[in-house]
Length: 184
Image (cartoon, rainbow, N blue to C red; front, side, top):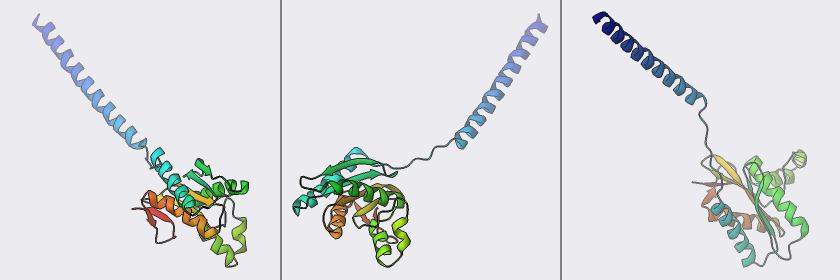
């Protein structure tokens, strides 16, 4: 009887040892998998920020009685908000979207490309997805591009002023290296 009890105790201890070892090994494997599969997070524009951007830009245009279209895109250049004021030309709608997309994808103000073209860099006009017209600004925050905003319908400097009113409303400041808007 003692031999059976001893044998059963031995089996119990061996089983506990093996289960514990398996559990530790499995946890180590899970930790290694977690490290390999670690997801990177990034900031995105939320509904309130998008509304704030668009509302501030529209308020700036309305204050000056400018008939414009304003577009906000995400970091992939996809339209997330748009408004065309009464009296804005039909062409201003697509131009605003294209300027915002250009600013977001290149992470530069469209002024950068307009100035390149004006200085004689003819190839600027043929860069895919680049709109060399002033009025589009990227939305950069902590080194990440959140999207872009642009206006179209009045003189270029006023288009940019409208877009800047939007970026300012969410706390963006001048980025020293590109002249683009970046939040602190």
